[in-house]
Image (cartoon, rainbow, N blue to C red; front, side, top):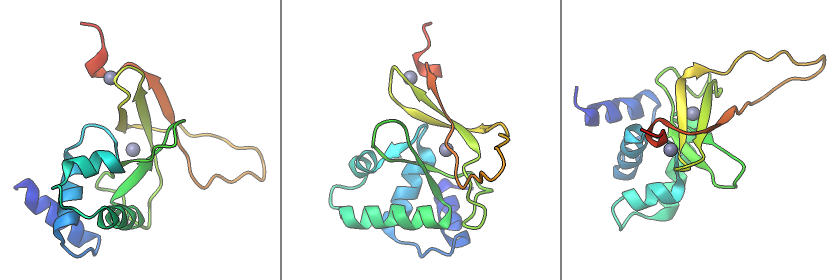
Length: 142
Ligand SMILES: [Zn+2]
Ligand SMILES: [Zn+2]
C-alpha cells in the first residue's frame, strides 16, 4: 500500500477530514526518525502554509491520539506520530524517549516500554514521561 493511502486511512480512522495541511503534517511526522518541533515541521511544509493552521492541526492530532508530545528539560515542545494502537481513548505515553546529547534529537523508542512503577498510597499518576539521555545510533563512534 502506498504511504499516501496510509495517511488518508489514518485520518479517516481518527474521524479527521482530509486537508492538504493535515496530510502533509502527518506524512512528515510518519517519516521522521525523531520527534519534531512545530518550527521543524514548519520548515518542511510548503512555504505558503499558514502557521496558525499548522498549530491547530497539531492540536487536533494530539487530541485525537495521532501524535503525542515529547518534552525534555528545554521548553521546546516536540511531536511524534503515535503508534497504530494509540487512540483518543487510550492515549497514554507508554514508551521510552531517548535524547541524544550529541545531535540533540529525541527518539521515540516505541518498542521499549516504560517499566511499571509502584507509587505510594494515595498517589495517582495521570501522565508519565520517561526520558533517557546518551548517544544515539547515528552518533556512536565507528
Ligand atoms: Zn545522535
Ligand atoms: Zn514517543
